[in-house]
Each structure stands twice: as C-alpha cells, then as structure tokens.
Length: 265
Image (cartoon, rainbow, N blue to C red; front, side, top):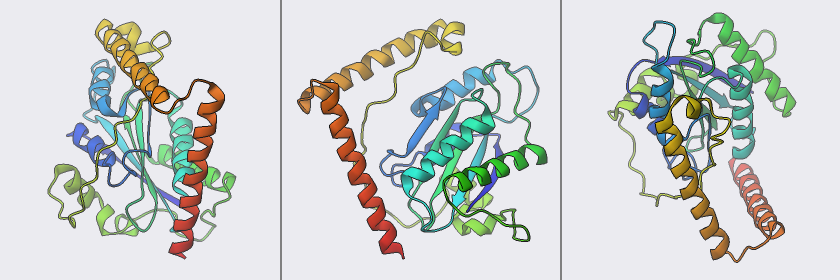
C-alpha cells in the first residue's frame, strides 16, 4: 500500500529540491529521475517556465510524497511506481524531479513539480479533485505492481504524523530551511555520474530561449565526453558489452535489495 500527500511550495524552491536530492537519502543520488529538466538546475528551469505563467498565484511548485509500507517494495520498484505516477497525473506537461528516499524504515518518493505547465503556461490546480486523482492513480499502480491497497473502511487520508515525526509538514519545512535537528551521518563521497542528454530539437524551452538552447548543447557535449570516458575506461567497444555490464549491475542491485528486504523481516 502507498499513501500520498501534497502541499504547495511558495518559497525556497531550490532548498526543497536540494533536500529531496540529498545523497544520503537517495543511495548517493542513484534514485533520482527528472522530466523536462535536469535535477541539478531544476529550480532555474522551473523559474523560466514560471516567468511565462498566464495565471496569478504565488505557488512555485508542488511537493507530492508517496510512502510505501515497510518491506513491501524494493527501492527500484518504488522509484518506477513514482515515475509512472508522476507521468500519469502530470500528463507530460510539467517539469518534475522525482527522488526515492531509503534512509528510513519505509521507502517513500518525493516528487517536486513546477506550478506552471510548459505547454500552455497555466497554473496547476490543486484541490480535492486533483488529490483524489493522485490517490486513485497511486492505488491503481500499487495493484498493477502487486502491492496491497487501502480497502473500503480503512483510513485513506494520511495525517502528518502517519509518516513519522520526521515527515510532518513542519519537520519537512525545517529540513528544507536547514534548522531541523538530525543525527549526524558519516560523510559519503559524492558520485558524479552521466546525466541524460537533452532532446534539443523537440524541446519547447529550447525553441523559446536561445540561451537555454546554447546551455543544452554544452551540457550534451559534456555528457557525451563523460560517456566516451566511461566506455574507454571499461574497455567497451560494442553495444553488447555495454548491455552485459548493465545487466550485471542490475542483477547485483536486485540481489542487494532482496537481501536487505530479508534482513528487515
């Protein structure tokens, strides 16, 4: 079963995105996806879209949390479900950053999406109807993935403390502001990986902003160079070799997730 909650972001959008992308919570930033933007520059890209808003309002974005029952889902599957949820409810019109947090007893997704869609520049309407749509879609995906869902008579709405004291609106706000008191963690080396390339030809933002188009070209060149370095370092010259490496990594990841799930029982 997964429970959902959503609240608007009116200030410090960059801090909210930095919080959900914390390497200590996202398996060193492996469990991060984005749509229509790069997570590293999402607040800037959101700002570009917000500047074209046709509707009034002070919301910069919306923060959706999807929390799963302990031991009921693997990290990778939770992330896939989160992406399917975001793609469905946002209809491919809103930039978003999705992260899966695995540092607590229960796995949960954070989805921060722009308050304005980049197709029509209209504001997202958050109300009971849109929340029911999110909740129902989350339930459908849980069923599709073989997870339990809320049955008639059970509590459907998530109160703040249901997710634990660390996940009340107040606690999340404090974490984003940097005033939340948490136990110190050992520093982890930041992993610098290869990001996805930007489809400049089909990018609406690239067509509207020459500055963004130039930045995207430079970004793509840098990522291509990183990809070439990776292939050279691992002596990969054919697609089949690359697929074999990816399959091996995927198998190891699934085995590790299964082991952790067994330990939690």
